[in-house]
Image 1 (cartoon, one colour):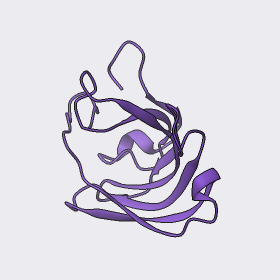
Image 2 (cartoon, rainbow, N blue to C red):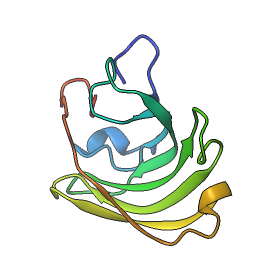
Image 3 (cartoon, rainbow, N blue to C red):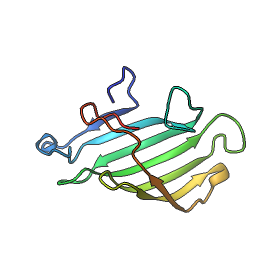
Image 4 (cartoon, helix red, strand yellow):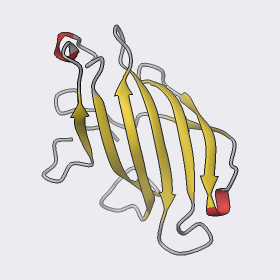
Length: 128
């Protein structure tokens, strides 16, 4: 969020959003890189995580996320995607979100994915 070319931007908010420490009601659009590892400068790009999330928790930072993992770079998964939907409660070490579909090699995908926070800067909102 704090970089010159951010991959996450706030696109809407409620009139009362700034009254909540959790940014309740804020809506963000994202287009994050998917890499093999957490270091963006050394890890190979394998796709993009594109979607929208809403700050849905009034008293705790909880996001409602809808996103697609879109694979690039050639190979069997190039152009295929996995669709994810669900809550992302940031205070929980390992979060699960539903896999609700996909395209290409992942057509009709079902299941779940797990999210873990690698890093988070509360001052800037940047996370990894």
